[in-house]
Image 1 (cartoon, rainbow, N blue to C red):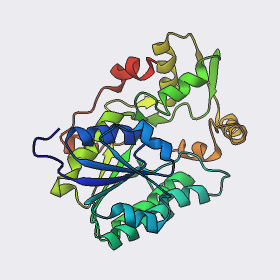
Image 2: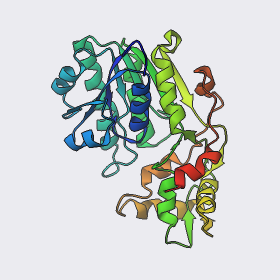
Image 3: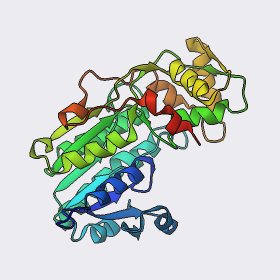
Length: 300
């Protein structure tokens, strides 16, 4: 912890999630005051003892105004990968409506610094998810606040929704038929994403900037599945599906518990999640080799 005591007071929306837990730990390491906002009071049990917690509905402006009082920075990590139904309304509520409510609450509370999670290629393509991410970015850019945007590719780490999710699917199956098998990703280590937020916090040049956050290596979806099986020591096959069958797989997945794949996931898979403009080095971060981290990611 910093010998000079806390340097920032941050309110974090989505601080109990996958990226949030990594970021909260990293901020506390530097001696910052951290307040995690969530609807569920039991979230407190999953947070480090030094972190503060405030339970309430982050979609309610009154709650956010009260939570932001005395803060100097807001971090928005709230996100979903699937919505109920397929009309975009679920994504709009989480990304667009929440961002608008948060910006209004920040203005009312006098908080100017905003670190906002987005996604690689936000606003591009036909995916409801990416469209909503893009609309949220537009709100942030026009907010008049001191904002920074972060656009990661898929994020890898223990308990992730990538390698760990495929490990669950492969555990009792001899293989996996896979739509979008050739789509390229650039998995980024969760610790690098957390570090990007921490580094940008005090960088004047990060204000009004957006950073693509990607790993060192590009991998196809099929390769990600094969690496998962290989790391676990499981002999599994991957069966790439032609487009009509991949689309059918997404239609079926729409109605399965947990939506292992949805129509909107399929739309997102029509675009590679890669970037030639990696923001990590711009923030002084050497991208971690995710392949070397696979035993740690999948060890449990």
